[in-house]
Length: 224
Image (tube, rainbow, N blue to C red; front, side, top):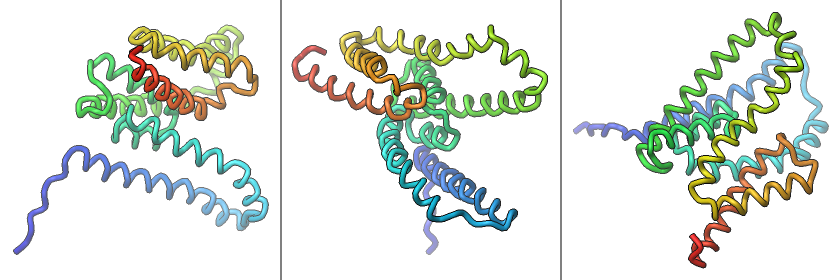
């Protein structure tokens, strides 16, 4: 007797589709250098490639593991799959998802939060793609305008303005818990000039882990 296949739940379908697209992207990324080697009839210098990978891979592997642990509880399964495929998590997808859940009045790691997070990140990815296409089409005539002094100064403030707006909302919810990580990041970035926007991928997980530890201590002491 033929068994009936049970319909996939929403979460199961997310994991199925997420794995398909994740492995597909993985294959596409590795196909590009392979195709270039075939077209130009060349092979990499394996010794130089190995030395280069050994210099950078440990950091990226560590960041990748930390980001999965950090971002998935906030973004949910669907949001995490979409974010890791499309990129720009810390400076675009994460703020977008958190803001959407805040406006919808839902919490992360709930079914409602899962849906809102996935929809918001999907829309964000579509809008970003459209903007990139428009940018590619008009980049040449708009280059003088975009490189003008007035606009370049404004572009430098986009990210601080974005996180500043989100920061006011979330910091005001629990000032006692928010102050320790804010103070830590201020001290680190002032004391260590090498820390800049390029280190966000490392510093965001560090801040999250530090906040979790502080929250646990404050909770045990009855402060929060």
